Length: 354
Image (cartoon, rainbow, N blue to C red; front, side, top):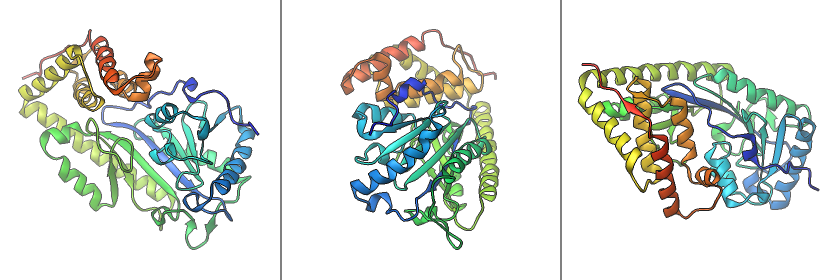
């Protein structure tokens, strides 16, 4: 029975949710499971498909606002494209039989079906607007709640596949560009401080990923014993303190080591304008440097929003979509360099005021 949307997800004009110079965007994720159904990792393909069908039939009533996709219909490149856009996890991208995704037309809400839990509903917002991200996720969760019976108990709250998500089932994540703390040598101490406060510090794609371009994802570790409002408020306060730390670090490095800053920016721009082969990891580091430069007014003719979009465009699947062809890794490095050479052609650096 083909009731899934036939349009491909990139027809929704997927773009990164660009934030400010430090807080790049946020997400609130709600984990939910259907009562009387086995968790996905313990379920058979037939059982996962039954859950998928049940959820998708409910969402069908909201077809004007949400599109539904069956991941088994996606090619490997299509799965990678949605993963790079941070709409699904690596685990769901690799799932076969009974995996699906629901995406709002503005891509501000994306729900993974049959990842670790039956439902992982995500709301996205720019900067540190976690209240907005929460409202988006909660509004969609409430729509499904009217037709689905979630697994919940008075003692434990929402039941989840992983005990760390018991209770509210809510994970609040904020993406930060922490290049200032890296440049001053204070990053490791800042990360240890966050971990002591029981926060998770991960790479750009969350669990299992490494930092790229000095971009880190900060999220709460605890969901049991606190209500949603308390979690949101705590994360907001800690993230505001982290922004102040990063801003102070940037001011300090500009004041104490202006020549070092100029050298880093000059080297980054020269490579981006002239290099012939550019791996994605190196490109992220160089764009990260220019993002810092743009934030402090030393890079002209290139905005933070444009850099954020470039960081997405240079990823393998997005690059192939840009060129409308499948490329080998070596070809991707070559075309990535050509793309960046062109985009950086008009960029100019200013001197640090002394």
